[in-house]
Amino acid sequence: MERTTTAHRRRLLLAISGGLVAAAVLRGVLRALAMQLLAASLLMLLALPLCRHLEKRLPGSAAALLSLGTLLLTAVLTLVLLLPPVAGQLRALANELPALVDNLQGLLLQFSAQLESRGIALTAVRDGVLSRLTDAAGSILSRVMGLASSLISSLSQLLLSPLMAFYLLRDRRKIAAGLTLLLPVAYRARGVRAAREMKRESAAFFRGQLMLSLLVGGMTALGLLLTGTPGWLLLGVLMGVFELVPYIGPVIAGAPAVLLSLQGGWGRALWTLAVLVIIQQIEGTLLSPRLMGSATSLHPMTVLLLVSAGGMLGGTLGMVAVIPLVVSIRGALRGWRE
Image (tube, rainbow, N blue to C red; front, side, top):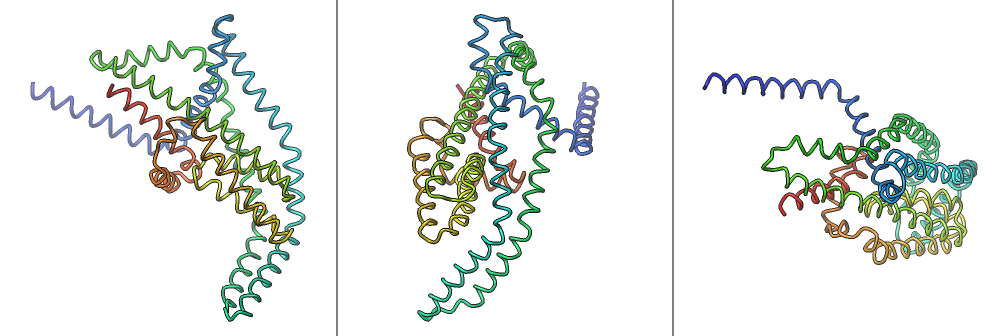
């Protein structure tokens, strides 16, 4: 008996060690597969409400294909409508970048002169800021192009995600039944409740976050258009994307808007800042509680710590993924305890 137990432990230890070694060797492949599966799951969750409605009248394959096709067609049409004006504004800002840097340097020198006239000497700080501003202006275009190329490369790796989403959507009940059978009988009911709560929490979060990003991005673009900020549509899209990162994202996306509005003087910059603050207040007090539901019950300090940890572990992707991951785990634990 003891020999059998020892042999079983050795085999288990060897299997775990082999799995860890394989995961370390194939880390890049496993990461790409995980990204494809995550994107497919997200597409499936977004198309699920329409698919359930269509399944009342159509077969499962047709309902899954039609719902997923509608979602992808909407996304493609949105990109087709947005990409030309956004690219035009990006080219215009690139052409105006030297003039913008000169304008910012002039405003900084003027502000420094006013402080020095009142006995506050900031010559060293001013020279350092001017030097960094010039260096940043020289590298900003290369960074933007590098970001665009990396984004295109990342999207090309997700080409199989819509096909995976179709099979997940069509065979979701069979997949759920198969995974349920893998659990021991004693824990099967708990596992089903945990999976149900996890799906409910994650679906509600993703749908609410998508609607929140669209609304905040649209309001930002409209507000910046009214204030006359250059690149208002590009900045609105940027704000909608960075809305995925709680608390920190709006600050990162709002800084370029304020800097670009300085071309029109301090008055326009203050108006732009006021518009951004008002939109964030609307998002925090009205939109987020209605769209995000229980996902907003996380304490702000907890969210900041999670976002910081996600950024340290996985960069920008980690900052975006950490909150939905925690929300999903929280739902699974709630279902398991009930």
